Image (tube, rainbow, N blue to C red; front, side, top):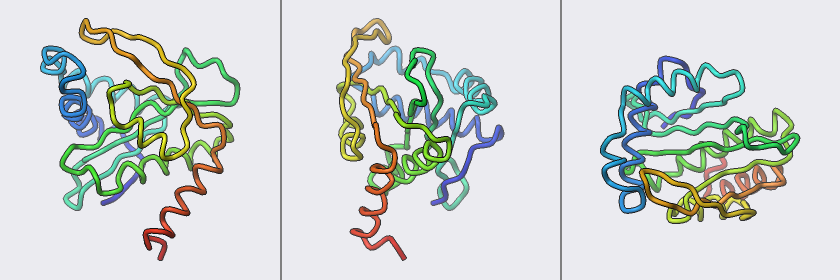
Length: 184
């Protein structure tokens, strides 16, 4: 598996992972009709815009055949008014590639970028019923707020988590690599 920075040519592959991941991740959480109506074409257009944004950092995971199987991105949401901070805006991996450490590698690349840019706080928004929140908690994210949002006509609880020490998160990556013997 390879992790690299996304280029504009990756927009279609990212869009496919985005739509397919939403359909598996949010099945039973977001209404089926909403998930069914997600469009690869519209998501490709969205990802072209996202990749072109100067303030957006997008990384992808590829399988050995060069197919995009996951992605992550970060940029500062308009609602984020905290100085010297940013938002982890998404991490999605195709279901058949879960459990292989790709989420950790994508998260690590984002946090290396956050460190490079000198951020002090990072926020992530995650639906309460999405088990990914436990992944973020494992890497030190602290719940700071809960709000209600509407997706597909359904009211959902969205949790807002915060990391306030990027060095601690990066140190946790180093410790888990040493513990698993990945540090060669």
